[in-house]
Length: 129
Image 1 (cartoon, helix red, strand yellow):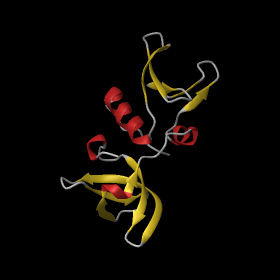
Image 2 (image 1 turned 30 degrees about the vertical axis):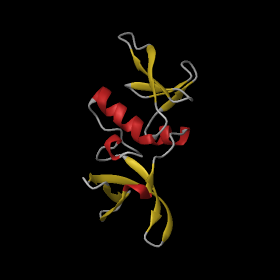
Image 3 (image 1 turned 45 degrees about the horizontal axis):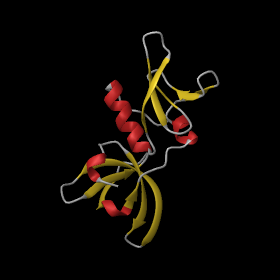
Image 4 (image 1 turned 120 degrees about the vertical axis):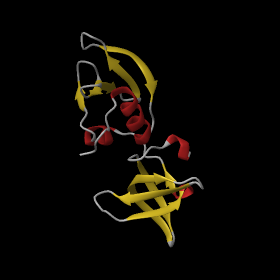
């Protein structure tokens, strides 16, 4: 994972800690020039700085799409919210003026990619329930 691909608020999985293995979802609170991330545990207030090598991207799954408030539509065969739709292969589409899905614009594989794309298209943060 490259620090240049991350934004403040992105979710990442921490897999290493000082004493060994870790498997925690963290929210990025700062990206430091030397390549470390300031992160916090979701729901907590304390922040810590760790090397970026201790983190991996979170694979985008149906579970994550539902946590972000997407709803599956049998009609479009996509997970939809008011701005974009994501199919089961991670292809993202936008809606045209008649609220029909336009061509798929890109493919996302990870949660932080969806968060970043959503922000670029809407100017809003994608919030996890």
